[in-house]
Image (cartoon, rainbow, N blue to C red):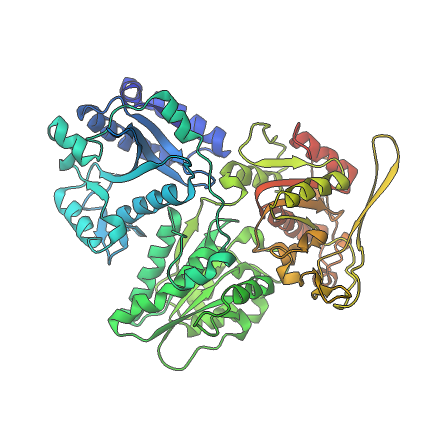
Length: 632
Protein backbone atom coordinates (compact mmCIF):
# COMPACT_ATOMS: atom_id res chain seq x y z
CA UNK A 1 0.00 0.00 0.00
CA UNK A 2 1.47 3.33 -1.03
CA UNK A 3 -1.06 5.59 0.64
CA UNK A 4 -4.13 5.03 2.79
CA UNK A 5 -6.69 7.19 4.55
CA UNK A 6 -10.26 8.38 4.57
CA UNK A 7 -11.59 9.43 1.18
CA UNK A 8 -12.37 12.97 2.32
CA UNK A 9 -8.85 13.45 3.75
CA UNK A 10 -7.12 12.18 0.61
CA UNK A 11 -9.40 14.37 -1.51
CA UNK A 12 -8.45 17.42 0.53
CA UNK A 13 -4.72 16.70 0.20
CA UNK A 14 -4.95 16.06 -3.52
CA UNK A 15 -6.95 19.20 -4.28
CA UNK A 16 -4.64 21.33 -2.15
CA UNK A 17 -1.66 20.41 -4.33
CA UNK A 18 -1.84 17.56 -6.81
CA UNK A 19 1.85 17.81 -7.69
CA UNK A 20 2.99 17.70 -4.07
CA UNK A 21 0.69 14.77 -3.24
CA UNK A 22 1.82 12.73 -6.27
CA UNK A 23 5.47 13.43 -5.44
CA UNK A 24 4.94 12.18 -1.89
CA UNK A 25 3.33 8.96 -3.16
CA UNK A 26 6.10 8.53 -5.75
CA UNK A 27 8.70 8.76 -2.97
CA UNK A 28 6.86 6.04 -1.05
CA UNK A 29 6.67 3.94 -4.23
CA UNK A 30 10.45 4.10 -4.60
CA UNK A 31 10.94 3.20 -0.95
CA UNK A 32 8.65 0.16 -1.23
CA UNK A 33 9.74 -1.14 -4.63
CA UNK A 34 13.36 -0.03 -4.78
CA UNK A 35 12.80 1.83 -8.06
CA UNK A 36 10.96 5.07 -8.95
CA UNK A 37 7.62 4.96 -10.79
CA UNK A 38 7.69 5.57 -14.52
CA UNK A 39 6.75 8.93 -15.93
CA UNK A 40 3.60 7.42 -17.47
CA UNK A 41 2.55 5.96 -14.13
CA UNK A 42 2.93 9.29 -12.35
CA UNK A 43 0.98 10.95 -15.15
CA UNK A 44 -1.86 8.44 -14.73
CA UNK A 45 -2.00 9.23 -10.99
CA UNK A 46 -2.24 12.93 -11.74
CA UNK A 47 -5.09 12.40 -14.21
CA UNK A 48 -7.12 9.61 -12.61
CA UNK A 49 -7.12 10.00 -8.83
CA UNK A 50 -8.96 13.31 -8.69
CA UNK A 51 -11.98 12.29 -10.85
CA UNK A 52 -12.49 9.19 -8.68
CA UNK A 53 -12.17 11.07 -5.40
CA UNK A 54 -14.49 13.86 -6.57
CA UNK A 55 -17.13 11.29 -7.49
CA UNK A 56 -16.81 9.55 -4.11
CA UNK A 57 -17.10 12.81 -2.17
CA UNK A 58 -20.04 13.91 -4.33
CA UNK A 59 -21.70 10.56 -3.54
CA UNK A 60 -21.40 11.18 0.19
CA UNK A 61 -18.77 8.46 0.63
CA UNK A 62 -16.04 10.61 2.14
CA UNK A 63 -15.91 8.51 5.31
CA UNK A 64 -14.92 5.29 3.49
CA UNK A 65 -11.31 4.22 3.80
CA UNK A 66 -9.20 4.17 0.65
CA UNK A 67 -5.85 2.71 -0.30
CA UNK A 68 -4.11 4.01 -3.41
CA UNK A 69 -1.93 1.52 -5.28
CA UNK A 70 -2.90 -1.31 -2.93
CA UNK A 71 -0.49 -4.25 -3.19
CA UNK A 72 -2.17 -7.64 -3.30
CA UNK A 73 -0.65 -9.80 -0.54
CA UNK A 74 2.44 -11.81 -1.56
CA UNK A 75 2.32 -10.59 -5.16
CA UNK A 76 3.93 -7.74 -7.02
CA UNK A 77 0.52 -6.66 -8.35
CA UNK A 78 -1.05 -3.38 -7.31
CA UNK A 79 -4.71 -2.37 -7.49
CA UNK A 80 -5.26 1.25 -8.56
CA UNK A 81 -7.55 1.94 -5.61
CA UNK A 82 -9.25 -0.13 -2.93
CA UNK A 83 -12.18 1.04 -0.78
CA UNK A 84 -13.29 -0.33 2.58
CA UNK A 85 -16.76 0.10 4.04
CA UNK A 86 -19.28 -1.68 6.27
CA UNK A 87 -22.52 -3.33 5.20
CA UNK A 88 -25.61 -2.81 7.40
CA UNK A 89 -25.16 -6.36 8.77
CA UNK A 90 -21.62 -5.59 9.96
CA UNK A 91 -19.71 -7.37 7.18
CA UNK A 92 -16.65 -5.56 5.87
CA UNK A 93 -16.76 -4.83 2.13
CA UNK A 94 -13.79 -4.10 -0.09
CA UNK A 95 -14.29 -2.52 -3.51
CA UNK A 96 -11.51 -2.99 -6.07
CA UNK A 97 -11.30 -0.02 -8.45
CA UNK A 98 -9.44 -0.01 -11.76
CA UNK A 99 -8.84 3.42 -13.30
CA UNK A 100 -8.43 4.01 -17.05
CA UNK A 101 -7.87 7.21 -19.03
CA UNK A 102 -9.31 5.71 -22.20
CA UNK A 103 -11.30 7.69 -24.75
CA UNK A 104 -12.97 6.50 -27.93
CA UNK A 105 -9.92 7.56 -29.94
CA UNK A 106 -7.58 5.50 -27.74
CA UNK A 107 -9.43 2.20 -27.72
CA UNK A 108 -10.84 -0.39 -30.08
CA UNK A 109 -12.83 -3.16 -28.43
CA UNK A 110 -11.53 -6.53 -29.58
CA UNK A 111 -12.95 -10.03 -29.46
CA UNK A 112 -14.09 -10.73 -25.91
CA UNK A 113 -11.21 -10.60 -23.46
CA UNK A 114 -8.93 -8.14 -25.19
CA UNK A 115 -8.94 -4.46 -26.08
CA UNK A 116 -6.71 -2.55 -28.46
CA UNK A 117 -5.50 0.39 -26.37
CA UNK A 118 -3.27 2.59 -28.49
CA UNK A 119 -0.74 0.24 -30.08
CA UNK A 120 -1.08 -2.47 -27.45
CA UNK A 121 -3.37 -5.42 -26.89
CA UNK A 122 -4.44 -5.50 -23.24
CA UNK A 123 -6.93 -7.35 -21.08
CA UNK A 124 -10.52 -6.11 -20.92
CA UNK A 125 -10.68 -3.99 -17.73
CA UNK A 126 -13.70 -5.88 -16.37
CA UNK A 127 -11.77 -9.15 -16.70
CA UNK A 128 -8.82 -7.46 -15.01
CA UNK A 129 -10.94 -6.43 -12.00
CA UNK A 130 -12.58 -9.86 -11.87
CA UNK A 131 -9.08 -11.35 -11.55
CA UNK A 132 -8.26 -9.08 -8.61
CA UNK A 133 -11.58 -9.95 -6.98
CA UNK A 134 -10.87 -13.67 -7.34
CA UNK A 135 -7.41 -13.24 -5.85
CA UNK A 136 -8.76 -11.51 -2.75
CA UNK A 137 -11.48 -14.15 -2.30
CA UNK A 138 -9.26 -17.17 -2.94
CA UNK A 139 -5.86 -16.30 -1.51
CA UNK A 140 -6.52 -13.93 1.40
CA UNK A 141 -7.52 -15.82 4.53
CA UNK A 142 -10.15 -14.04 6.69
CA UNK A 143 -10.86 -16.90 9.11
CA UNK A 144 -12.84 -17.10 11.31
CA UNK A 145 -14.92 -14.34 9.67
CA UNK A 146 -15.55 -13.27 6.09
CA UNK A 147 -15.49 -10.10 4.02
CA UNK A 148 -17.20 -9.24 0.73
CA UNK A 149 -15.34 -8.27 -2.45
CA UNK A 150 -16.81 -6.01 -5.13
CA UNK A 151 -15.28 -4.38 -8.20
CA UNK A 152 -15.62 -1.35 -10.44
CA UNK A 153 -13.92 0.04 -13.53
CA UNK A 154 -13.86 3.84 -13.74
CA UNK A 155 -13.21 5.20 -17.24
CA UNK A 156 -13.41 8.86 -16.32
CA UNK A 157 -12.78 10.13 -19.89
CA UNK A 158 -14.78 7.50 -21.80
CA UNK A 159 -17.95 8.45 -23.71
CA UNK A 160 -21.14 6.41 -23.38
CA UNK A 161 -20.61 4.61 -26.70
CA UNK A 162 -17.27 3.15 -25.66
CA UNK A 163 -18.65 2.10 -22.29
CA UNK A 164 -21.55 0.31 -24.02
CA UNK A 165 -19.12 -1.55 -26.30
CA UNK A 166 -16.99 -2.66 -23.38
CA UNK A 167 -20.02 -3.87 -21.43
CA UNK A 168 -21.30 -5.81 -24.43
CA UNK A 169 -17.91 -7.46 -25.06
CA UNK A 170 -18.02 -9.35 -21.74
CA UNK A 171 -21.80 -9.77 -21.47
CA UNK A 172 -21.43 -13.55 -21.67
CA UNK A 173 -18.70 -13.83 -19.03
CA UNK A 174 -20.10 -14.80 -15.65
CA UNK A 175 -17.02 -13.55 -13.77
CA UNK A 176 -17.45 -10.03 -15.17
CA UNK A 177 -21.16 -9.57 -14.52
CA UNK A 178 -20.66 -8.23 -11.02
CA UNK A 179 -18.05 -5.64 -12.09
CA UNK A 180 -19.50 -2.15 -12.51
CA UNK A 181 -18.18 -0.26 -15.53
CA UNK A 182 -18.52 3.53 -15.36
CA UNK A 183 -17.76 6.13 -18.01
CA UNK A 184 -17.60 9.90 -18.09
CA UNK A 185 -21.37 10.37 -17.91
CA UNK A 186 -21.73 7.90 -15.03
CA UNK A 187 -19.64 10.15 -12.77
CA UNK A 188 -22.37 12.77 -12.86
CA UNK A 189 -25.73 12.62 -11.09
CA UNK A 190 -27.34 12.77 -7.70
CA UNK A 191 -25.65 11.63 -4.54
CA UNK A 192 -27.64 8.39 -4.41
CA UNK A 193 -27.12 7.64 -8.11
CA UNK A 194 -23.36 8.03 -7.83
CA UNK A 195 -23.11 5.88 -4.71
CA UNK A 196 -25.12 3.12 -6.40
CA UNK A 197 -23.06 3.17 -9.59
CA UNK A 198 -19.85 2.97 -7.58
CA UNK A 199 -21.16 -0.11 -5.76
CA UNK A 200 -21.08 1.63 -2.39
CA UNK A 201 -24.70 2.73 -1.77
CA UNK A 202 -25.12 0.47 1.28
CA UNK A 203 -21.72 1.17 2.83
CA UNK A 204 -20.85 3.20 5.91
CA UNK A 205 -17.39 4.23 7.19
CA UNK A 206 -15.40 1.36 8.75
CA UNK A 207 -13.91 1.60 12.23
CA UNK A 208 -10.14 1.80 12.57
CA UNK A 209 -10.12 -1.70 14.07
CA UNK A 210 -11.79 -3.07 10.93
CA UNK A 211 -9.21 -1.43 8.70
CA UNK A 212 -6.34 -2.86 10.74
CA UNK A 213 -7.95 -6.31 10.66
CA UNK A 214 -8.18 -6.26 6.86
CA UNK A 215 -4.63 -5.00 6.34
CA UNK A 216 -3.27 -7.75 8.62
CA UNK A 217 -5.07 -10.64 6.88
CA UNK A 218 -2.68 -13.52 6.11
CA UNK A 219 -2.20 -15.05 2.70
CA UNK A 220 -3.32 -18.64 2.17
CA UNK A 221 -0.55 -20.98 0.99
CA UNK A 222 -0.53 -20.99 -2.81
CA UNK A 223 -0.77 -24.28 -4.65
CA UNK A 224 2.31 -25.21 -6.66
CA UNK A 225 1.72 -25.49 -10.40
CA UNK A 226 2.80 -29.12 -10.45
CA UNK A 227 0.22 -29.96 -7.76
CA UNK A 228 -2.46 -28.07 -9.68
CA UNK A 229 -1.54 -29.04 -13.25
CA UNK A 230 -4.22 -31.72 -13.66
CA UNK A 231 -6.91 -29.14 -12.90
CA UNK A 232 -5.24 -26.53 -15.10
CA UNK A 233 -5.28 -28.95 -18.05
CA UNK A 234 -8.92 -29.76 -17.29
CA UNK A 235 -9.69 -26.00 -17.29
CA UNK A 236 -10.86 -26.29 -13.69
CA UNK A 237 -8.17 -24.56 -11.66
CA UNK A 238 -8.05 -22.15 -8.74
CA UNK A 239 -5.33 -20.30 -10.61
CA UNK A 240 -6.52 -17.08 -12.22
CA UNK A 241 -4.33 -14.77 -14.23
CA UNK A 242 -4.11 -11.22 -12.91
CA UNK A 243 -2.67 -7.91 -14.04
CA UNK A 244 -0.02 -8.10 -16.75
CA UNK A 245 -0.48 -11.86 -16.91
CA UNK A 246 -3.92 -11.14 -18.36
CA UNK A 247 -2.43 -8.65 -20.81
CA UNK A 248 -0.02 -11.34 -21.99
CA UNK A 249 -2.81 -13.90 -22.29
CA UNK A 250 -4.99 -11.44 -24.22
CA UNK A 251 -2.14 -10.71 -26.65
CA UNK A 252 -1.61 -14.44 -27.15
CA UNK A 253 -5.28 -15.12 -27.87
CA UNK A 254 -5.38 -12.20 -30.30
CA UNK A 255 -2.37 -13.59 -32.18
CA UNK A 256 -3.93 -17.05 -32.32
CA UNK A 257 -7.22 -15.61 -33.58
CA UNK A 258 -5.40 -13.59 -36.24
CA UNK A 259 -3.40 -16.60 -37.39
CA UNK A 260 -6.56 -18.72 -37.53
CA UNK A 261 -8.61 -16.24 -39.54
CA UNK A 262 -5.93 -14.50 -41.63
CA UNK A 263 -3.63 -17.44 -42.25
CA UNK A 264 -0.55 -15.51 -41.14
CA UNK A 265 2.15 -16.91 -38.90
CA UNK A 266 2.69 -15.02 -35.66
CA UNK A 267 5.25 -14.82 -32.87
CA UNK A 268 4.52 -13.54 -29.36
CA UNK A 269 7.44 -12.84 -27.03
CA UNK A 270 6.63 -12.84 -23.30
CA UNK A 271 9.51 -11.66 -21.14
CA UNK A 272 9.36 -11.99 -17.37
CA UNK A 273 11.60 -12.47 -14.38
CA UNK A 274 11.42 -15.21 -11.73
CA UNK A 275 7.95 -15.89 -10.39
CA UNK A 276 6.08 -13.70 -12.88
CA UNK A 277 3.86 -16.61 -13.95
CA UNK A 278 5.34 -17.55 -17.33
CA UNK A 279 4.85 -21.30 -16.87
CA UNK A 280 1.34 -20.84 -15.45
CA UNK A 281 0.32 -18.82 -18.52
CA UNK A 282 1.92 -21.42 -20.79
CA UNK A 283 -0.01 -24.25 -19.10
CA UNK A 284 -3.27 -22.28 -19.33
CA UNK A 285 -2.70 -21.76 -23.05
CA UNK A 286 -1.93 -25.42 -23.57
CA UNK A 287 -5.25 -26.37 -21.98
CA UNK A 288 -7.48 -23.69 -23.46
CA UNK A 289 -6.28 -23.05 -27.02
CA UNK A 290 -8.09 -25.99 -28.70
CA UNK A 291 -11.42 -25.02 -27.11
CA UNK A 292 -10.87 -21.37 -27.93
CA UNK A 293 -10.33 -22.00 -31.66
CA UNK A 294 -12.74 -24.93 -32.11
CA UNK A 295 -15.95 -22.84 -32.44
CA UNK A 296 -14.51 -21.27 -35.60
CA UNK A 297 -14.25 -24.74 -37.16
CA UNK A 298 -10.44 -24.71 -37.23
CA UNK A 299 -8.47 -27.82 -36.30
CA UNK A 300 -5.91 -26.55 -33.79
CA UNK A 301 -3.52 -28.23 -31.37
CA UNK A 302 -0.91 -26.87 -28.99
CA UNK A 303 2.28 -28.32 -27.60
CA UNK A 304 4.43 -27.22 -24.68
CA UNK A 305 8.12 -27.13 -25.61
CA UNK A 306 11.11 -26.55 -23.36
CA UNK A 307 14.87 -27.14 -23.53
CA UNK A 308 14.92 -27.85 -19.80
CA UNK A 309 14.91 -31.50 -18.68
CA UNK A 310 13.89 -30.72 -15.10
CA UNK A 311 10.84 -28.69 -16.11
CA UNK A 312 9.72 -31.19 -18.76
CA UNK A 313 10.05 -34.14 -16.36
CA UNK A 314 8.07 -32.35 -13.65
CA UNK A 315 5.29 -31.41 -16.09
CA UNK A 316 5.00 -34.90 -17.57
CA UNK A 317 4.73 -36.47 -14.13
CA UNK A 318 2.22 -33.87 -12.91
CA UNK A 319 0.05 -34.41 -16.01
CA UNK A 320 0.12 -38.21 -15.78
CA UNK A 321 -3.32 -39.63 -16.51
CA UNK A 322 -4.50 -36.56 -18.39
CA UNK A 323 -6.22 -37.35 -21.67
CA UNK A 324 -3.79 -35.28 -23.72
CA UNK A 325 -0.81 -37.25 -25.05
CA UNK A 326 2.52 -35.82 -26.10
CA UNK A 327 1.75 -32.44 -24.59
CA UNK A 328 5.31 -31.79 -23.42
CA UNK A 329 8.39 -32.11 -25.58
CA UNK A 330 11.95 -30.87 -25.92
CA UNK A 331 12.34 -28.00 -28.39
CA UNK A 332 14.82 -29.92 -30.54
CA UNK A 333 12.50 -32.94 -30.73
CA UNK A 334 9.41 -31.01 -31.86
CA UNK A 335 7.86 -32.12 -35.13
CA UNK A 336 4.83 -30.29 -36.55
CA UNK A 337 1.94 -32.53 -37.46
CA UNK A 338 0.60 -32.71 -40.98
CA UNK A 339 -2.49 -30.55 -41.52
CA UNK A 340 -4.31 -28.30 -39.09
CA UNK A 341 -3.06 -25.34 -37.14
CA UNK A 342 -0.39 -25.77 -34.52
CA UNK A 343 0.64 -23.48 -31.66
CA UNK A 344 4.12 -23.98 -30.21
CA UNK A 345 4.46 -22.78 -26.60
CA UNK A 346 8.16 -22.47 -25.74
CA UNK A 347 8.94 -22.02 -22.04
CA UNK A 348 12.39 -21.29 -20.55
CA UNK A 349 13.38 -20.31 -24.08
CA UNK A 350 16.53 -18.53 -22.89
CA UNK A 351 18.01 -22.01 -22.30
CA UNK A 352 17.84 -22.96 -26.00
CA UNK A 353 21.21 -23.64 -27.66
CA UNK A 354 21.03 -20.91 -30.28
CA UNK A 355 23.74 -22.45 -32.50
CA UNK A 356 21.32 -25.22 -33.45
CA UNK A 357 18.67 -22.82 -34.80
CA UNK A 358 15.86 -24.77 -33.17
CA UNK A 359 13.86 -21.68 -32.27
CA UNK A 360 13.98 -20.39 -35.85
CA UNK A 361 12.84 -23.82 -37.10
CA UNK A 362 9.83 -23.72 -34.77
CA UNK A 363 8.90 -20.23 -35.96
CA UNK A 364 9.06 -21.40 -39.58
CA UNK A 365 6.69 -24.33 -38.99
CA UNK A 366 4.19 -23.30 -36.28
CA UNK A 367 1.19 -21.09 -37.01
CA UNK A 368 1.85 -19.28 -33.73
CA UNK A 369 5.03 -19.46 -31.67
CA UNK A 370 4.79 -18.23 -28.09
CA UNK A 371 8.21 -17.58 -26.54
CA UNK A 372 8.49 -17.26 -22.75
CA UNK A 373 11.95 -16.15 -21.67
CA UNK A 374 14.06 -14.20 -19.21
CA UNK A 375 17.32 -12.67 -20.47
CA UNK A 376 18.59 -12.57 -16.88
CA UNK A 377 18.41 -16.38 -16.64
CA UNK A 378 20.90 -17.18 -19.40
CA UNK A 379 23.48 -19.44 -17.73
CA UNK A 380 25.58 -20.95 -20.55
CA UNK A 381 27.70 -19.29 -23.25
CA UNK A 382 25.84 -21.11 -26.06
CA UNK A 383 22.40 -20.00 -24.87
CA UNK A 384 20.25 -16.89 -24.76
CA UNK A 385 19.08 -14.07 -26.96
CA UNK A 386 17.92 -10.48 -26.67
CA UNK A 387 14.56 -9.11 -27.73
CA UNK A 388 16.25 -7.51 -30.74
CA UNK A 389 17.73 -10.86 -31.73
CA UNK A 390 14.34 -12.54 -31.35
CA UNK A 391 12.86 -10.00 -33.76
CA UNK A 392 15.66 -10.83 -36.19
CA UNK A 393 14.97 -14.59 -35.87
CA UNK A 394 11.30 -14.03 -36.63
CA UNK A 395 12.12 -11.84 -39.62
CA UNK A 396 14.55 -14.39 -41.07
CA UNK A 397 11.90 -17.09 -40.52
CA UNK A 398 9.51 -15.07 -42.69
CA UNK A 399 7.11 -14.23 -39.87
CA UNK A 400 5.03 -11.09 -40.36
CA UNK A 401 4.00 -8.91 -38.68
CA UNK A 402 6.82 -8.38 -36.17
CA UNK A 403 6.57 -10.25 -32.84
CA UNK A 404 4.13 -8.94 -30.26
CA UNK A 405 6.13 -8.18 -27.10
CA UNK A 406 4.75 -8.35 -23.56
CA UNK A 407 6.67 -7.72 -20.34
CA UNK A 408 5.54 -9.41 -17.13
CA UNK A 409 6.58 -7.17 -14.26
CA UNK A 410 4.83 -8.23 -11.05
CA UNK A 411 6.23 -11.38 -9.47
CA UNK A 412 4.60 -13.87 -7.13
CA UNK A 413 7.73 -15.41 -5.64
CA UNK A 414 10.12 -13.98 -3.01
CA UNK A 415 7.11 -12.92 -0.96
CA UNK A 416 5.87 -10.84 -3.89
CA UNK A 417 8.66 -8.39 -3.09
CA UNK A 418 9.50 -6.32 -6.13
CA UNK A 419 11.89 -4.46 -3.86
CA UNK A 420 13.94 -7.63 -3.29
CA UNK A 421 14.25 -8.43 -6.97
CA UNK A 422 15.16 -4.84 -7.82
CA UNK A 423 17.74 -4.80 -5.02
CA UNK A 424 19.19 -8.20 -5.91
CA UNK A 425 19.32 -7.23 -9.57
CA UNK A 426 21.43 -4.20 -8.72
CA UNK A 427 23.68 -6.10 -6.29
CA UNK A 428 24.36 -8.95 -8.72
CA UNK A 429 25.38 -6.65 -11.54
CA UNK A 430 28.49 -5.06 -12.95
CA UNK A 431 27.46 -1.64 -11.67
CA UNK A 432 29.36 -2.04 -8.36
CA UNK A 433 26.19 -1.32 -6.40
CA UNK A 434 26.50 -1.50 -2.63
CA UNK A 435 22.95 -0.71 -1.54
CA UNK A 436 22.02 -2.21 1.82
CA UNK A 437 19.05 -4.50 2.27
CA UNK A 438 16.82 -2.91 4.94
CA UNK A 439 16.22 -4.76 8.19
CA UNK A 440 12.47 -4.07 8.01
CA UNK A 441 12.15 -5.24 4.40
CA UNK A 442 9.25 -7.29 3.05
CA UNK A 443 11.24 -10.45 2.23
CA UNK A 444 13.22 -12.67 4.59
CA UNK A 445 16.72 -12.45 3.15
CA UNK A 446 19.91 -12.75 5.12
CA UNK A 447 23.53 -13.85 5.25
CA UNK A 448 24.35 -17.07 7.09
CA UNK A 449 27.34 -17.06 9.44
CA UNK A 450 28.59 -20.40 8.17
CA UNK A 451 27.32 -23.53 6.33
CA UNK A 452 26.33 -25.21 9.59
CA UNK A 453 24.09 -22.27 10.54
CA UNK A 454 22.70 -22.23 7.00
CA UNK A 455 21.87 -25.93 7.20
CA UNK A 456 20.25 -25.51 10.62
CA UNK A 457 18.04 -22.72 9.26
CA UNK A 458 16.86 -24.94 6.42
CA UNK A 459 16.41 -27.97 8.70
CA UNK A 460 14.15 -25.95 10.99
CA UNK A 461 11.84 -25.03 8.12
CA UNK A 462 11.79 -28.59 6.79
CA UNK A 463 10.88 -29.81 10.29
CA UNK A 464 8.00 -27.32 10.31
CA UNK A 465 6.58 -28.89 7.17
CA UNK A 466 7.96 -26.30 4.77
CA UNK A 467 9.92 -27.18 1.65
CA UNK A 468 13.49 -25.93 2.08
CA UNK A 469 16.43 -26.64 -0.22
CA UNK A 470 20.18 -25.97 -0.37
CA UNK A 471 21.87 -24.95 -3.64
CA UNK A 472 25.42 -24.05 -4.61
CA UNK A 473 27.46 -22.78 -7.50
CA UNK A 474 28.95 -25.57 -9.66
CA UNK A 475 32.35 -25.30 -7.95
CA UNK A 476 32.74 -28.89 -6.69
CA UNK A 477 33.19 -32.04 -8.74
CA UNK A 478 30.14 -34.27 -9.02
CA UNK A 479 30.66 -38.01 -8.48
CA UNK A 480 28.07 -39.93 -10.50
CA UNK A 481 26.61 -42.93 -8.68
CA UNK A 482 24.04 -45.62 -9.43
CA UNK A 483 20.79 -46.20 -7.55
CA UNK A 484 22.44 -48.85 -5.38
CA UNK A 485 25.47 -46.77 -4.39
CA UNK A 486 25.62 -44.26 -1.56
CA UNK A 487 25.97 -40.62 -2.55
CA UNK A 488 29.39 -39.01 -2.16
CA UNK A 489 29.78 -35.84 -0.08
CA UNK A 490 31.30 -33.85 -2.94
CA UNK A 491 30.36 -30.39 -1.67
CA UNK A 492 32.87 -29.65 1.10
CA UNK A 493 33.23 -26.29 2.82
CA UNK A 494 35.85 -25.49 5.48
CA UNK A 495 36.01 -22.41 7.67
CA UNK A 496 37.38 -21.17 10.97
CA UNK A 497 34.80 -20.31 13.60
CA UNK A 498 34.82 -17.40 16.04
CA UNK A 499 36.92 -19.41 18.51
CA UNK A 500 39.57 -20.18 15.92
CA UNK A 501 38.51 -23.82 15.48
CA UNK A 502 38.65 -25.28 11.97
CA UNK A 503 35.27 -26.61 10.84
CA UNK A 504 34.06 -28.65 7.88
CA UNK A 505 30.59 -29.15 6.35
CA UNK A 506 29.78 -31.80 3.73
CA UNK A 507 26.82 -32.73 1.59
CA UNK A 508 26.32 -34.67 -1.67
CA UNK A 509 25.07 -33.14 -4.89
CA UNK A 510 21.55 -34.08 -5.92
CA UNK A 511 21.41 -37.67 -7.18
CA UNK A 512 21.63 -38.39 -10.92
CA UNK A 513 19.24 -41.31 -10.40
CA UNK A 514 16.91 -42.21 -7.56
CA UNK A 515 18.76 -43.75 -4.61
CA UNK A 516 17.22 -46.67 -2.73
CA UNK A 517 18.26 -48.21 0.58
CA UNK A 518 18.76 -51.92 1.25
CA UNK A 519 15.00 -52.34 1.61
CA UNK A 520 14.44 -50.66 -1.78
CA UNK A 521 12.96 -47.58 -0.14
CA UNK A 522 13.70 -44.15 -1.66
CA UNK A 523 16.53 -42.25 0.03
CA UNK A 524 17.11 -39.48 -2.51
CA UNK A 525 15.00 -38.50 -5.53
CA UNK A 526 16.26 -38.37 -9.09
CA UNK A 527 17.84 -34.98 -9.80
CA UNK A 528 14.89 -33.66 -11.83
CA UNK A 529 12.65 -34.12 -8.76
CA UNK A 530 15.17 -32.86 -6.19
CA UNK A 531 13.31 -29.55 -5.64
CA UNK A 532 9.91 -31.12 -4.98
CA UNK A 533 10.26 -34.64 -3.59
CA UNK A 534 10.98 -35.92 -0.09
CA UNK A 535 14.66 -36.61 0.39
CA UNK A 536 15.80 -33.66 -1.71
CA UNK A 537 16.53 -31.73 1.47
CA UNK A 538 19.51 -34.04 2.06
CA UNK A 539 21.44 -33.00 -1.04
CA UNK A 540 22.74 -29.80 -2.61
CA UNK A 541 20.99 -28.71 -5.78
CA UNK A 542 22.80 -27.21 -8.75
CA UNK A 543 21.67 -24.55 -11.21
CA UNK A 544 20.14 -27.12 -13.57
CA UNK A 545 17.90 -28.73 -10.95
CA UNK A 546 16.90 -25.41 -9.35
CA UNK A 547 16.11 -23.34 -12.43
CA UNK A 548 12.37 -23.23 -13.26
CA UNK A 549 11.63 -24.64 -9.79
CA UNK A 550 10.29 -23.04 -6.63
CA UNK A 551 10.41 -23.95 -2.94
CA UNK A 552 9.54 -22.04 0.21
CA UNK A 553 12.98 -21.52 1.74
CA UNK A 554 16.34 -21.56 -0.01
CA UNK A 555 19.97 -21.62 1.04
CA UNK A 556 22.67 -20.61 -1.44
CA UNK A 557 26.40 -21.33 -1.17
CA UNK A 558 28.47 -19.07 -3.39
CA UNK A 559 31.63 -20.76 -4.68
CA UNK A 560 34.93 -19.16 -5.60
CA UNK A 561 33.84 -18.63 -9.21
CA UNK A 562 32.34 -15.25 -8.22
CA UNK A 563 34.11 -13.10 -5.66
CA UNK A 564 34.09 -9.47 -4.54
CA UNK A 565 37.36 -7.59 -5.03
CA UNK A 566 38.18 -3.88 -4.87
CA UNK A 567 34.59 -2.70 -5.04
CA UNK A 568 33.31 -5.01 -7.78
CA UNK A 569 32.53 -8.58 -8.78
CA UNK A 570 35.33 -10.67 -10.27
CA UNK A 571 34.64 -13.93 -12.10
CA UNK A 572 37.07 -16.84 -11.94
CA UNK A 573 35.93 -19.31 -14.62
CA UNK A 574 38.50 -21.95 -13.63
CA UNK A 575 36.64 -22.42 -10.34
CA UNK A 576 33.53 -23.57 -12.20
CA UNK A 577 33.85 -27.32 -12.79
CA UNK A 578 30.67 -27.67 -14.86
CA UNK A 579 31.57 -29.74 -17.97
CA UNK A 580 29.53 -27.30 -20.06
CA UNK A 581 32.05 -24.57 -19.20
CA UNK A 582 35.30 -26.52 -19.21
CA UNK A 583 35.46 -26.64 -23.00
CA UNK A 584 34.26 -23.08 -23.51
CA UNK A 585 37.53 -21.45 -22.47
CA UNK A 586 35.82 -18.30 -21.27
CA UNK A 587 37.76 -15.28 -20.11
CA UNK A 588 36.84 -13.76 -16.73
CA UNK A 589 35.06 -10.94 -18.60
CA UNK A 590 33.01 -13.43 -20.64
CA UNK A 591 32.15 -15.56 -17.62
CA UNK A 592 31.16 -12.68 -15.32
CA UNK A 593 27.61 -12.03 -16.68
CA UNK A 594 26.89 -15.77 -16.66
CA UNK A 595 28.14 -16.17 -13.08
CA UNK A 596 26.01 -13.24 -11.94
CA UNK A 597 23.00 -14.79 -13.69
CA UNK A 598 23.61 -18.19 -12.07
CA UNK A 599 23.55 -16.77 -8.54
CA UNK A 600 20.63 -14.51 -9.46
CA UNK A 601 18.66 -17.64 -10.38
CA UNK A 602 19.66 -19.50 -7.22
CA UNK A 603 18.70 -16.55 -5.00
CA UNK A 604 15.25 -16.16 -6.58
CA UNK A 605 13.89 -19.70 -6.13
CA UNK A 606 12.47 -19.35 -2.61
CA UNK A 607 9.00 -17.92 -2.04
CA UNK A 608 9.34 -17.15 1.69
CA UNK A 609 12.98 -16.69 2.61
CA UNK A 610 16.58 -17.06 1.48
CA UNK A 611 20.00 -17.21 3.14
CA UNK A 612 23.33 -16.95 1.37
CA UNK A 613 26.91 -17.86 2.37
CA UNK A 614 30.12 -17.36 0.41
CA UNK A 615 33.11 -19.64 0.86
CA UNK A 616 35.34 -16.66 0.02
CA UNK A 617 35.98 -14.57 3.14
CA UNK A 618 36.19 -11.18 1.39
CA UNK A 619 32.95 -11.87 -0.44
CA UNK A 620 31.29 -13.06 2.76
CA UNK A 621 32.32 -9.84 4.49
CA UNK A 622 30.91 -7.79 1.61
CA UNK A 623 27.60 -9.64 1.87
CA UNK A 624 27.47 -8.97 5.61
CA UNK A 625 27.82 -5.23 4.99
CA UNK A 626 24.93 -5.35 2.50
CA UNK A 627 22.59 -7.23 4.83
CA UNK A 628 23.26 -6.02 8.38
CA UNK A 629 21.30 -7.53 11.26
CA UNK A 630 19.70 -10.39 9.29
CA UNK A 631 21.45 -13.73 9.67
CA UNK A 632 20.47 -17.33 10.20
